[in-house]
Length: 606
Image 1: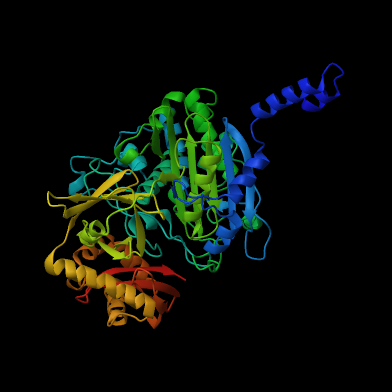
Image 2: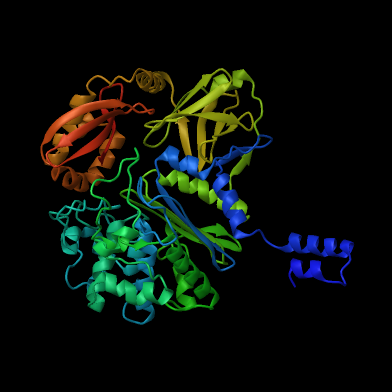
């Protein structure tokens, strides 16, 4: 009986009607439109301070500030899609985002691919613990000393424990030559990524490898004889009802009008539109938030034994069993007790997306068409979590206390982390922390020894000796603890001086002496594959050694350097340059230490 029926009833007195209607209103959950309005009007930061009003912002304002033109959201509640909505536009000046707008799922392609692998395992066509070379026909994973005693398996490919190289893929501009899958596997032109090889004993460590999923793509094609998009359509997308999704790369031209076009961090469109990803298994899925929500619901229902369109309940349990680094067979696993969840994020050129779903029925998918979509998605997820009272992802609340200024002074100094350093400074009653290569952030005291940050959910605790002097600090973030020992003497002074110099150069917007020359030299050395590690800090030299094949492949294809133009200094002290090559333009950021050695260098296409 509806409230309107109760009002019309001749048997109902005014008092009785008011009581019944009030009870019904209290029991009725909020309408989806009310929830949507509260979420889009009340995005939340990572940290709240008790006693202070929550500094909420509007979704539209954050999208504008972060240069993210469009967002698609689907929310799962009670085991079904409660609502799906588009916000913003598919392109500047273009049509609005709708629930049917296509985005690149980027790395969320991986757990969907994993479902196809597990389907073939379930049917007896594949085995998770057999040497992958027994299934590969078109190409074989080269053997080396690391694979002498431990062969690479499908289980290891899906869980990022195979010891494989190549973290991710930049994709290819719409007008660029596309490599075959074998060329990608071997790092041969026109592939713009390094060869996919084993460089650590399989099964010993967790290390994210999109390269492992490229091997899985080739293996699935060899095992079935089907092109990868057809295989995925037949085994996963179709049975689940992901009817708007496809792994076709490039996307068929007749579907381009459905796409949210990608945008850079500065709000400029990615030239030529969406990049093409022949690496379909790790990065090639085109989809909508609603279709990804259908994938999540399929997993939830299969686990409960309600739906088993693709996988059995037993196989889903295997998929959601965490291994090293909380990694399942495809998705990451989180939560605790009765509130376990599976999740995965994605980042392609001009796209950022996130999927989170609890095993027992709630979840959300957020997709954006901007490189700055990451922080926006975090804010949206926090607001969804608050609205639906999730046990995770909500803002953390802290209490600020007063600390003796003498204690604050004692913490000022430099602290050495494994590959970087913290610099703690004081301005008035405010301590700030700066990690090498990052801006400085204010710290707020919870106690004499423990401080928190507002910009991210992170805490810093100082360990003091019997005389009250800090010997080290511990960073708590993302469930991890990292300890940094306090530096003394010349080492401490150098680190503090470098931090001061970076701050000064940011204010003055002047490049560090020698940074352009170091950049030109570094680019030339990387193109030749012969970097001078003596001119780098040990931390950067270590990273460069591990990534050299991929860096050489990516930079060599750009051709000759035509011009280098200084554009400014970033808040962390990195000098920003625009470098025009024979075959494209890039933005480079380079940071030198006080000895003139390169402490950090990275680039992105423009």
